[in-house]
Each structure stands twice: as structure tokens, then as C-alpha cells.
Length: 83
Length: 83
Image 1 (tube, chains in turn yellow, brown):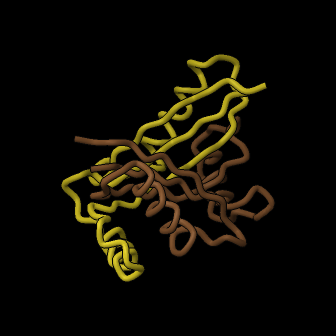
Image 2: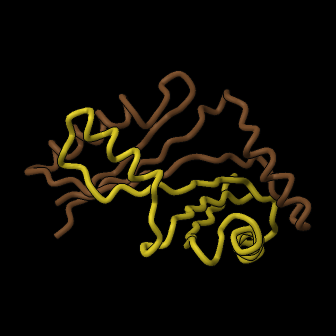
């Protein structure tokens, strides 16, 4: 069994209003030193795959077809073997 | 300057209907081998702090007071020095 961890982030050129709102909230708590806050998604799942290559192929396909918007988002993932 | 990366995940005992929905969508794409999918949040920001300890304290406080719901969610973070 393999375990995939995927992060999906808005591209740096895309405005992140949700991140801006959270940044303002953190400033309201008194932490004015925080800046350039961005929010992304984290997706984790297990895969019953025979090989590392197959698990990576399935993960890549899920990212491309479903999890990330290729116009606005970048994704990255790691795939680890689990017992 | 320091850079914080925070992950916020639903506790394992909490149902994740959003994750279930995405898992079903992945199955519809033909990847039946995917299971136990969970969705979390990723928050990244820069901090103008004098020391690593101060940056970690600010990050921890933001997690506790704002970013994670202590009843339902667990958080983890890393803080790295950046030039």
C-alpha cells in the first residue's frame, strides 16, 4: 500500500482573498509581523498499487484531472510506501 | 525573515464528507485503488521575527487561536529561516 500527500497552491501571480482575510485576522490578534499569507489545500489518500510507479501515475492523474485547476493552481505530491 | 508552513487536518475520528466526495470523484475517473482520502488546509506565511523562537511562538499562537479548531482539528507546522 502506498500513501500520497498532495499540496495544491494558488499560483504566485493569482490573488488570494481568503489568505488576505486570514492575514488581517492574525494582525487583529496582535501579530503584525505576519505577511504574504497564502492558503492551499492538502489532500492525502492511500492507494492499493503494486508498484511505486503505478501509485505515482494514479496520483498525478488525480491531480491533473480533478484536484488542481491547471490555470490557477500548482500541485506537488509525495508517494510513500506503507505497510 | 522566517517562513511558516502549517498543515491543519481533521482529527482521524472526525468524518470528512468533503474527502469522501472527492474519493468518489476519483473512483469515477477509474482509480478504484484510492481509499481513505482526507482533505486538510495548508497555510503559509512569512514572519519578520528576530529569532526562530519568536517566529515559532507567533505561528503556534496563530494556529491555536485562529487556524485550527481544537475540538475537531490537529495542526502541525515548520518554521524555516529565509534570507
